[in-house]
Image (cartoon, rainbow, N blue to C red; front, side, top):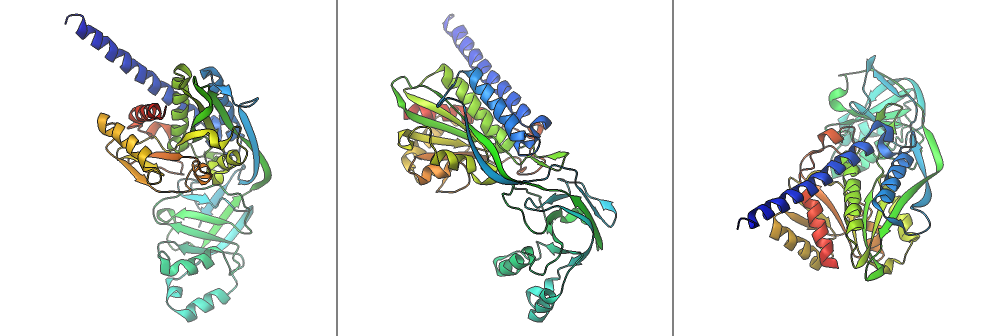
Length: 422
């Protein structure tokens, strides 16, 4: 007994140090990926390339091997960017980019001062008022549309017409009632849209002064990063672990979107798992893929699914990881309803160890990089944590406010689940 208890204490201390080390590494990865140097891991100031080089170097240091001759799988796509200074004033009041407003990601360049024309709610119910409104010409003007006023299915067609600017204004202002959310665009529109937080909009403002320059890149080249640990018994069969490393990048020359939860958290989990499996090879090969251009439309994963480096039929299972920085309310499993046996196995592990409050399931969804693999018949899950911070696709998704509430528990859950697949 005198020998047993100290041994247990030593084991527990060692386990604690193991997970403490993992969390230290996790913070280091997330801090690096969300740093100003990475420029939001988008397509201004080489953000995506800087992040890719960092991940490739991590793969090499961890001891992963490239599946082909190199870690990079390159592909190209169009993207609209805003690399230069931006400014917006309403009645001589300067608004703060990111905090007060966002530029529509498909906007063209514009510079000038314009009148503000408010879209009255009467056009929803008064056909004459609606016809009169759309007959007018709105040159040298920006239409102001309160999105709260036109919400609901019954107003969708009308709102679509307003957002499409069929009346030919120089631009439109969309007043967001609660939160600003940005997405990259592969297109360049003929007019700019501005998303302004309603609480930041001066009451009864009359004029808007706006200046920004877009750069539309027709053929930007980015890359997936791919490495693997060779299986001890079935090296030609793969369990694939994926996460996208890209984010929204920059809007202008000073505002960037850090993307801590989305998806520095998932990328850090991918690297943590790579460290583990590099030291603990499994029967099947474990492949690690950091996808680019997920935020642009799942482009990196689509490219890999169409140009695989090994037959997709050799994939025993794929697990895609995104938004793993919280977990207060548990974990969601996309495709859980498609593969109930695998989902039940995951739930059984959680029930045994009580890692997470709950593991929920849903069916198919084209909401992350697992999607193209599922469509091609590969058994796939996409997991993301629930609850906690509300920061998403905005400037507030920062490393310093990312709680990592159940990060270690998710790590344990995933490794045990993969162990069941062996």
